[in-house]
Image (cartoon, rainbow, N blue to C red; front, side, top):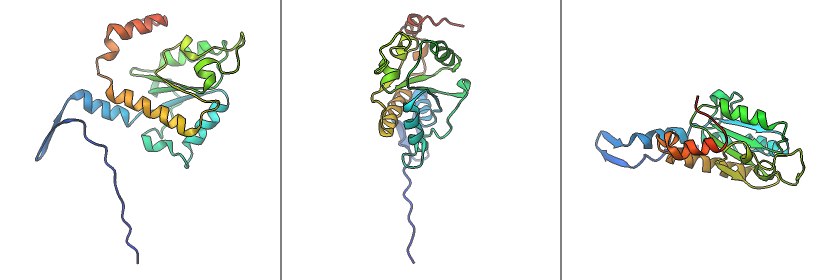
Amino acid sequence: MSQITTKVNNVPAPPGFEGPGFFATSLDSVIGMARKNSLWPLPFATSCCGIEFMASMASHYDFARFGSERVSFSPRQADVLMVMGTIAKKMAPVVRQVYEQMAEPKWVMAVGACASSGGIFDTYSVLQGIDEIIPVDVYVPGCPPRPEQIIDGFMRIQDLAASESLGRRQTTDYKNLLERYNFTEK
């Protein structure tokens, strides 16, 4: 009879001081670790990049192993806006409204050439990159990008979430960034 062995990979502890029965670290590190491993994406898919995202959610690539098995279709419960595919200029106010409805902290991924730069559609009706209307944290190249690229982009968002200080969203640099996109404090 064969014996089944299971290897468990624990999340490494943030840097701090360890001893018998205690562990001390900064609050930023603990919250960053929690954010990193519990991001809920909101997919805004309009074309072929959305199909690749669906493939990344399937069992072969298993997006859920990154703590993102709960795909949120409500902006108020999402952390990461994943814009995938061609965004027409008529759709731009909708993307902006979805971004505005998301709670802080929030991150944005532009997935594919169309969301990043308009792709092959250099026309009057297509937005030439979503960074014209909302700030973007990570760009995933490709037409369409492979599921591995989407997962890699998501891992870059996780790195941002883990390393971002709690006070970053209150800094003047961040407020200036929002002002460039005409977002006002509520």
